[in-house]
Length: 66
Image 1 (cartoon, one colour):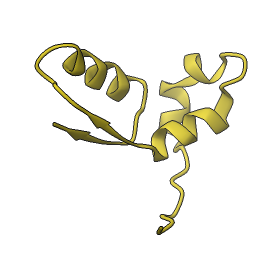
Image 2 (spheres, one colour; image 1 turned 90 degrees about the horizontal axis):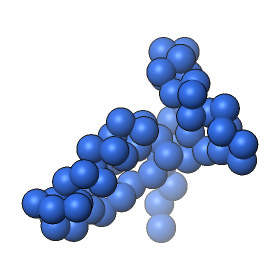
Image 3 (cartoon, helix red, strand yellow; image 1 turned 45 degrees about the vertical axis):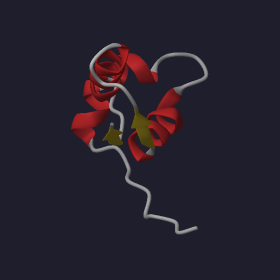
C-alpha cells in the first residue's frame, strides 16, 4: 500500500465549499478527506452519471468512471 501526499484546501476551495464545511460533523477535515478520496463509479449512463456530477460539485477528488 502506498501513501500519497495529502492535498490541503486552497483559500478559494475553502470559500467555494464553505456551505458544506459548516455542516455539523463534516468540517474542514471532512472536506479534505473528500478531496483526497479516490472513488470508482460504475454504470455512468444512469444513476452513476448523477453521482459523478454531484461528487464533483461537492469537491470530490479522483474519480474512476466505468
